[in-house]
Amino acid sequence: MKPVVFITGATSGFGRASARRFAAAGWSLILCGRRADRLEALKQELQGQVPVHTAVLDVRDAQAVADMVQALPGPFTAVTTLVNNAGLALAAQPAQEVALQDWQTMIDTNVTGLVNVTHALLPRLIETGAGASIINIGSVAGQWPYPGGHVYGATKAFVQQFSYNLRCDLIKTGVRVTDIAPGMAETEFSLVRYKGNQDAAEKIYRGTTPMSAEDIAEQIFYVASLPPHLNINRLEIMPVRQAWSPFAVDRDG
Ligand SMILES: NC(=O)c1ccc[n+]([C@@H]2O[C@H](COP(=O)([O-])OP(=O)(O)OC[C@H]3O[C@@H](n4cnc5c(N)ncnc54)[C@H](OP(=O)(O)O)[C@@H]3O)[C@@H](O)[C@H]2O)c1
View 1 (cartoon, rainbow, N blue to C red):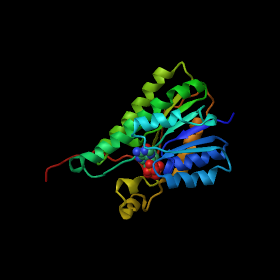
View 2 (view 1 turned 45 degrees about the vertical axis):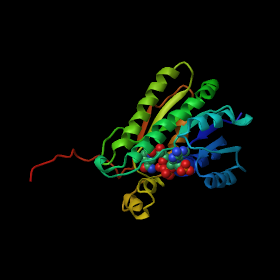
View 3 (view 1 turned 135 degrees about the vertical axis):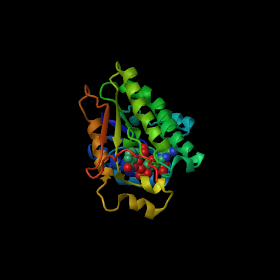
View 4 (view 1 turned 60 degrees about the vertical axis):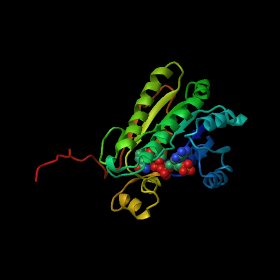
């Protein structure tokens, strides 16, 4: 039987590139996101290659997530790999200037949404057993603080710890859990963060060499394809032209 991958946030960036990468290897695809037109376009592109099931889904809606998983058609019920990718950053200004709603949207999507999908799919993944994987997309922001990281980084720290804790409970099930923590990658991520301001978004990537969505999709596929007895706990990856800064020190004068 073909392995089945369930990808959240498949309408853009890492999720869409992963759909293409898994399709190239013959996996069946379950693709979710809120933008129906993007899902339909991806289905048209890939369904000649592999079986594709799409679902318009807001991961923040626990009932909608549970219903969607319950309603998966026969050939898609045996999920091999869950890629918990849907997520976003909002606001890059200092914490004290950010609207509460932006913080809440990040928590609702990156934390609650990821938990909703994981909870709904755990029984299916455990049924699959050896070789099954949960691949959570965290971020370097979950480990390394930076100005303007506030709640975004905190949600990704949750993703890391939740991934580790899941491993403890799933040890006897064969289900692997990995936190993939990318650094700077050029997707629609910055366009979302700067709320549609194309110039502000492009500035982030100007004059440097960020990672691409395909670079990360390759890592996601690699993790999902490892022999069933191996678990990568956390995979942190940056472009060569990104590193850390010195500590900030506030001085008089
Ligand atoms: N790009 C980077 O530099 C970077 C670095 C580290 C980590 N990440 C993480 O990587 C993941 C993917 O980001 P990306 O860079 O590929 O950004 P992207 O191009 O903006 O893609 C984000 C995806 O998430 C989906 N999404 C957002 N909110 C959703 C919701 N409520 N329900 C369902 N789907 C939702 C979007 O689909 P719809 O809008 O159609 O719903 C979209 O497909 C995120 O978790 C992000 O935090 C990105």
